[in-house]
Length: 389
Image 1 (cartoon, rainbow, N blue to C red):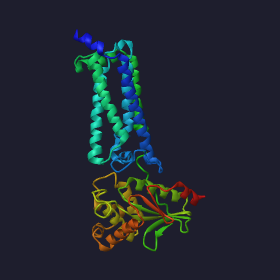
Image 2 (cartoon, helix red, strand yellow):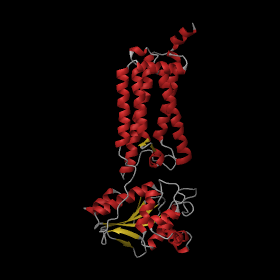
Image 3 (cartoon, rainbow, N blue to C red):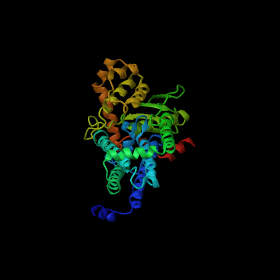
Image 4 (tube, helix red, strand yellow):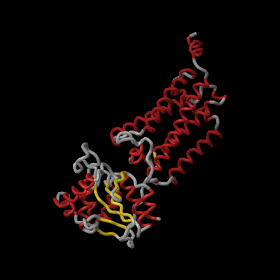
């Protein structure tokens, strides 16, 4: 009597099924968007996602993090694979042979995996990245809703023990040996091919300082590269732990390599390190100030570009940067480099760069000073186009 009443009050199976299908499709669409956004963050200098709102709410910060790559693939690509797998299983639940009961235990188990994975990603965002992505939060909500609905469907259409239900679902899939085997083989093959051939665009290529390109120091002692008689002079203020700084610096170096007689790039320091920069109140980009001191010292030893490129290469990818290793890679005496970190003249030059940046109303990196104007984050394409035309 109680079961009859329960079935009578339950909505038709199709309502539950298509709700779950809609959620899984929404998760797939969200993952595709995040995958595209991740790609553009690394490859498009003008790109900024719609949810790059602040330091705390910023999808781009999540994408720039090394935690956005899992086993050689971007996390959103694994999301795409996961939701596709979920939808393939869901399609089996609509077949007459499933009789409304099969696959739901398995989907419930998969939803648990999705939800636990969401909790892990949320923990990483909170404790390691210190920033949140709105579209990632949307995917977390979708995963928890999938967990809720698959549990509800199990209770209303197949309320047996979970382990027994999963075993029955796997047996049901096994009964379709040819179809299930073909689908599984294709799915696994696609994952393997993606892992092997997916372009590793997140490894930004280190620019090569070609010998024909002129370089030197300004009268004030700031390193420059490019044209001796430039049409356009770009002064960059950078932080070695800033992803966008690295991305823009590499772009400008490549642009200069293509047009060595038109553009000059002048390098200055603006570490967003609370120990050096007065506008940064809380710990942020810890160590970037000392990196700037290393580069200032290397400039005096005619090693600016070697040190500059090496620090940009390793600063965000490694946590165990050792002074002795840096000295050996750059070709500078280790003891002298250690001494320079506390040298008054070296620290004064860094303090002067930061003061000049603050005087120009710079409050973040990268910042570009062009013809008396400051541009934060990016350079308007029209300015570069005008210099090249």
